[in-house]
Length: 407
View 1 (cartoon, rainbow, N blue to C red):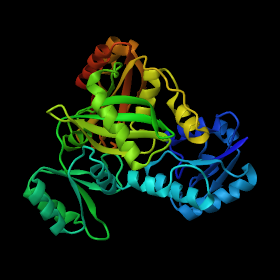
View 2 (view 1 turned 180 degrees about the horizontal axis):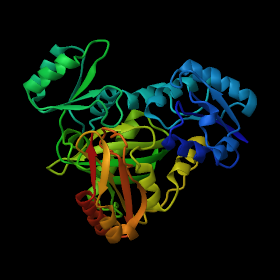
View 3 (view 1 turned 180 degrees about the vertical axis):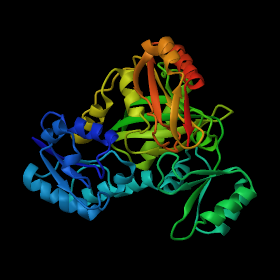
View 4 (view 1 turned 45 degrees about the vertical axis):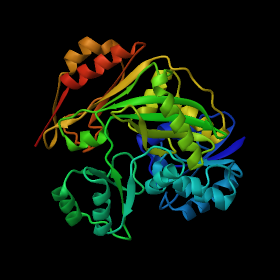
């Protein structure tokens, strides 16, 4: 048996799918470290985990080191330590270095986690990305604006997705932001040139420093635009055909970017733009499975289980590249108005028209509080062998479904 440790600060539904996949790997004895107690695990999953250790802080490297040593007495010395959260990648790398466990090292993990450092690496290697600067004072902000002009994007240095990300369009917006949340040397921010064009993702698997598999998704609209416009509904589309020459440049740039960051083996999620002139530019990349149901979308598009594929890759260095068999997309149902969910309109009509295409749905419930994110209050996933059919279905869903909010 191979001993593997999985770190999951909180036992959320999405995280449980990754834990379950790791627990089902043949020949693996799984130890789990979490802040949540073992009672939060579903009974079936609890029976598949060899040992559990509860900590006070699931992101603290020293607590993870101590917990891993304690688990080793029960499951044996761990061959791998893994976790699916963005915030875990640097702590896990630190633990690996302390305990001599193979996997991503601290320098590489920091290249992925610190977005300013990441873009500096890209620039050093001549890879296309937005102009950027780290700002620790209002003066730093002023100097960057003098160089780049408006609009600009403000991000946390260790952000994930579009959380705490803002677009500044003019000096008034900048002054308002500086009054409420000014950067400081202790809490700097990342300033970026605002990139225009089509936004996509590039999900990929690297094994021993080589690109073994990739997937391309399209975002409509861009997540930041959805956050700025409460009426917009977000869509993620995975076209079936991704082998054409129109994607040659991003395949080359993505592979070079991941090598420059130091990746050897892992599943990554990259966000990139196709600019109006047709060129590509990398926004950022994370060394972990994609969120927002994209791991599920990958599973449907390839008729395989990508949760299990990631677990086997990280725990056993095993990966079998699947073939794309379907076009797949998710329409995210975002509430309109303020307050809690009062009603859901249009679902019966959509069921009659598109029910045969739906492979998964998570529908909002009356009384539910809005998430306040671009993912909204629920989603519908559709699948078909023809890309055009999925595109039309997604457009229909976001035009007909209406989530009414109210007090």
